[in-house]
Length: 241
Image (cartoon, rainbow, N blue to C red; front, side, top):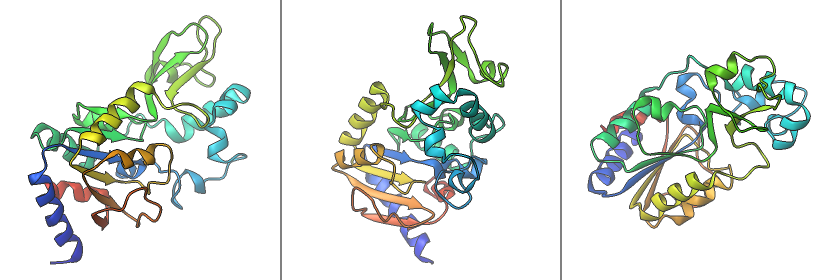
């Protein structure tokens, strides 16, 4: 039996004795669904644009370069055909079986809900909705696509996706739910994240439970020391079923 197989077996045992397990995930969870991550060589950081992605996806840039923001958003972040992958489906099934209390995600794609997960805390918002910054009217992602290239409300106001941009506060309600889930967890499974995005990664310090990490590369800057670390594909989650 190889090293990862032994570690998956250990994680499965940890999950079986857990009473309040939580999953904390990042961009790597959705990569098998065709959604790029941010910092890997094949991710958004490696793509050539006039500005770095951290600049384009910032609060200030949205209001000063709105057309360029939306051009980037539609080209890189709006992937309407993306579907849940095996990892999303495994997490939804674990919740259905009563093995998982919640999913905390840094992703904006809504694929956890599409897979069937019911308790999901979206720390960075969602691309499935948008709103007018003027009158507050709400829009679906499909509505926004129909208003390309520069989505504008009937009132004349700019339409902004309900995602957390650089320079913005995380949504209070989602943060409160995530922090409560982590504080009550006796096991946190971290997946598809290098734990380098703050403040979200720092929330892991709230847990007093055991921490297991599944990521394609080692987590070198984790805010907590994992009890178990598995270097491998996120779809290894299917082996917990």
